[in-house]
Length: 168
Image (cartoon, rainbow, N blue to C red; front, side):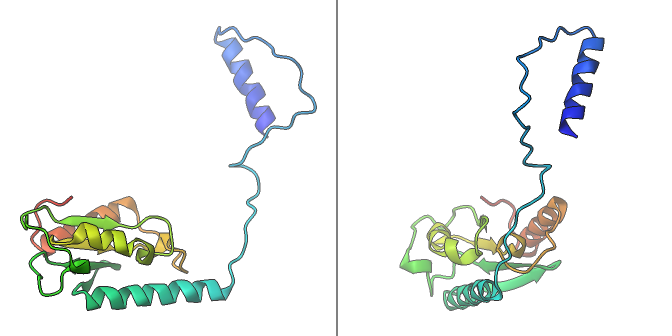
């Protein structure tokens, strides 16, 4: 299929007046097309998903213990902690500048918030913060990723809900 596509592209280019130089013949070289080749995949055992689930529950307990509140909006779960909650500061860190912008944290492709928790808690210390859970990239069994528009609408709605005009 790819060879036919390449031949058609070369024909079209020559018909439109572009000069094409022929290279040396390469009959023994096969084109590699990673995006069109069949996907080689490995099934994860059920134990893997159980471990990811347990890590998410441990993370929820830690966040709750540190004074974070769990909310849901339009099917997306997020954690919220107001910067003035000095009763239980994240990791015992205090910042003199309480007027810093609120922060939104999005974890990367991993087993979820758990891996990013120490970094997020340091970044969120002394400021209003949000942590958005993204199960579709958390190696969980959630196979329905939200659209970009849904994520953006949810972030805007969360900001309106908590009266946040700007965030980092």
